[in-house]
Image 1 (cartoon, rainbow, N blue to C red):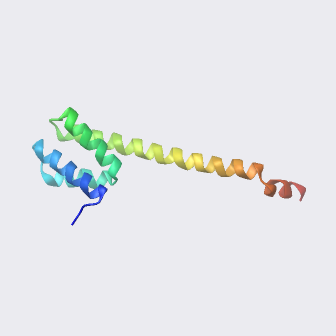
Image 2 (image 1 turned 90 degrees about the horizontal axis):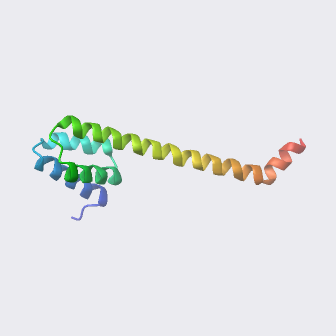
Image 3 (image 1 turned 45 degrees about the vertical axis):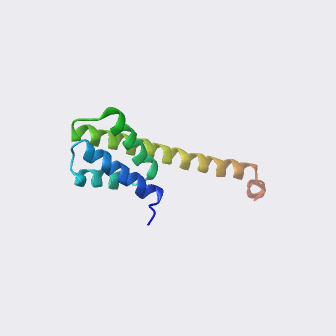
Length: 100
């Protein structure tokens, strides 16, 4: 059975966590919190490049990655809202509601 991209990144994350000497259960918790292919990919890059010695450092990086993702999601939601508002301003709906 072939793994999808998210499952593949989870396996890579677990492999890196274990290679650094941390228990697999710690890696499972990190993967569960990150919960997306891209965030797990960022964590794998961090683990491979920094090779942290403390679990606290890994947890801190996980929280930073999660915060970046939440910020990105909020930005995209704001952009979508602005797009819809601008569309409304240019639409006939605005003109007809002003006539009432």
